[in-house]
Image (spheres, rainbow, N blue to C red):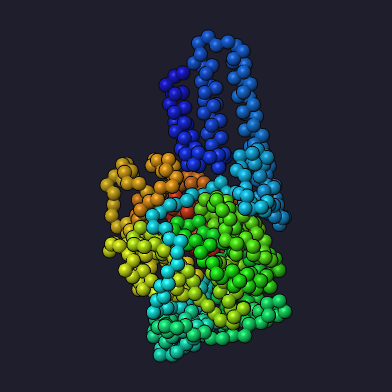
Amino acid sequence: MDSITIYVIILKGYYLCGDFLHHRRKMQDKRTFFPSFLSIMGVLLVSSPLSAQGAESSNNVTVIAILIIIGALILVSAILTLSQNFISLEAQKIGVDIDDETSDNPITKLWKSPAPSFTKGSTLVELDKGHDILLKGSAAKTIVDAKATRYAVKPQDYRGMSPIPKVLVAVGDEVKAGQPLLIDKKNDRVKHVSPVSGEVIEVKRGEKRSIAEVIILADKEIKYHQYEPPSISEASREDIVEFLLNSGGWTLLNQRPHDIMPSPEDVPANIFISTFDTAPLAPDYSIIIEGREDAFQKGLDTLNRLTTGNVCLGLDANGDKAPHAGYTEATGVNKRWFKGKHPSGNVGIQIHHTAPIKPGMKVWTLGVQEVIALGDLMHKGIFNAEKVVALGGNNVVNPTHIRTYAGANIGELVKENIVGDNFRIVDGDVLSGKQSSLEGFLSAKSDQISVIEEGDYYEIFGWLLPITPRPTISKTFPNFLYPNMEFEANTNTHGERRAFVVSGQYEKVLPMKIYPQHLMKAIMTGDFEQMEGLGIYELSEEDVALCEFVCTSKVPLQSILRDGLEMIREQS
């Protein structure tokens, strides 16, 4: 056996061991392990007849027969995969949805790991693409009360809203939680309400006299504006919609495509809720729903009255035990289990594998805590903006879950719980969140605050001498040998923007039948037909955040995607 063959075998063995150890020495993802195994066997089989000096001809015949069998299996698998892809494309053209379970070819199904027992035979979508970023500072599975004294309502939290809405209050006014503060001039039926009771202390303006924040000094005891909710089962859809518009409940809804507040005239094809989050330092949704199961079910019942389709619940099949019973035992919903790395918890990924968004189609999405708030509103007649937020990151002293209200001042929530003075506060997760500050306010639908080190320094020859461990999909670092290792991340990008070259990196981490790199180039060139054909309607910023993380070219994919969505929205 020559030196080149030995080198190839060692190299393939290195990657095989990495795949094997990465999956904790269990065949949890045989689709990665077995191709590597077969490739090594192929090298050995090819090299054997070349290196053997006096091998018998019968041995050569056996080797050739084995190679033919392996080649036949590969060819059959390729044909089945191509045929399934063509079927999926044709189904999309004629508007027929094909379940992921039925679209897998038989050979692919052989490598799939068995479904967890707690799924009880329900539909399971197993995703083989993605990447988990493990960071130090995950929130402890406890909840600490951390109410702030100041809260804000920010029009920029609601995409598509007029930058200068009509302000219904003045500085010095006393308000109750749920009392209207703003009216959108583009749609004066939609009212934005106060998350807490207290005194309006400032109406802060931004560029061109836009309304940036309406700030409220909260009471020690929250007082609620009382509404009279209609009966969920007996009231008409129109009555429920009108009630939500007047009480602030409508602002809990989000429409895809475009991630905007839906129009009161629109009826969604389906409504989607993801009950788990796979982003770095994400909150534990089992803690969030504890004790609020009834409100969650009331919210689901309300959503069922607002759609002609299904209310779809995405359930987590990644753990060793079932999610909270509040999710698994919810009624009146279409449940589907998802197993895979991040971004399997993103609602956009779940939509793609349940009922993809087609041109002209509109669906609604909500977070778990928005569903709970909707349930409280329809059951108790109060707008309860209470929420649990995960505070985490390597610059946090005691990472934990904190109970507060939407729009809370971030500085008051994290005070005396941050170490160091060179840090960045992110409102949301580190992949798709927004940079904030100690003077900033929590976004209306945010359930996470991440605090990590500011990356304002350069590593000398960092690209040549990769010494400091960091989260990456590159095998330059032996990260795959330590699948449970957590990293102390910072905000360094480790390079500037470069030529936008085809690398195939995005497709490895985006579990959707979409070509993101081609889509981004279509957006950059303003090609509307290509944008629609390549699936822009199915994407939101959080869906391509991981693609941006792995991008060698350092291209701001989330910003480009938003530009494309806005171009499409302006033309519609």
